[in-house]
Length: 156
Image (cartoon, rainbow, N blue to C red; front, side, top):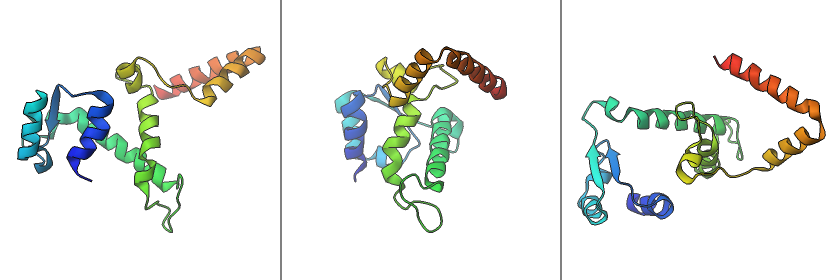
């Protein structure tokens, strides 16, 4: 699939036109087509400094995080199991991985990316189950608080 088609379907159509795009000088983003598209959309296009990956360090860190998540999902054969334990269909896992990443609280912001972008997080069946358990069993809240405290302590 062409990069511009993916960009249109996954970025512009769902989140609007970005004000700035930072690229690592990949030819896919420096072609005449892309230059004309940026001009037409009035989007600023910035290149990271050659051989200086610190320029887009946050993007590199996110890419590394996503790679680790994909490897873990595939290694445990989320849906498809390959003879080496890895799924050859890892692309089919991307929507689930995106949902998990987008709804997870991030330590730098204290919120999930989806909450920061849209102002809300989707609810999941487990969220409703948790509310029911805390309502039915009063000590469950105490146990939940203890569990949270233990997790917070271990995270430090």
